Length: 149
Image 1 (cartoon, rainbow, N blue to C red):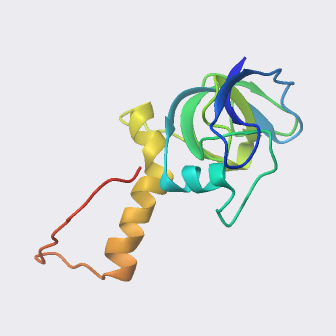
Image 2: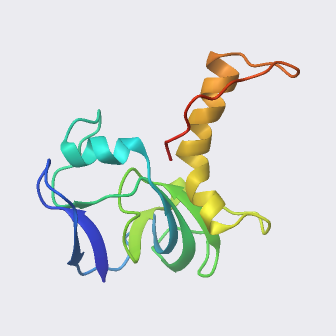
Image 3: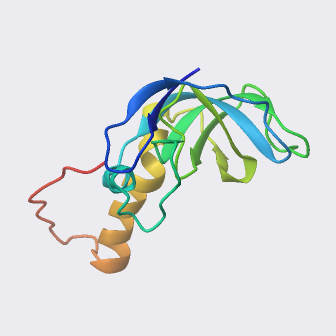
């Protein structure tokens, strides 16, 4: 299986062939369809983010896809479910094993691309406009740059 991995902080990521074990207790295996990319991914690559995984690791904090397998004790998700996951890493791969409690089932009307950008990119914007700026209906917002996830 291919994954876009960081072998050393501060170095470019590269496609790597890795072996993916079966999901363990409480995990699901996700076939990744879409992955959101965020500024935090660049910080993680450079080793300057607040949560820095030890290399080697696969970039991609938020993703969406289809469950291919479930580990023991996973009862609320099943093979074939469409889900989004915020895992902090692992999304830039063909598949990955992730904690089942991080998975959120997708509504039928939400695309994989929308779901892959929803948890961090959309969530950050929502927090900034609603909780920080306290933007109210009828107010006008001028966006002078929109170059994130």
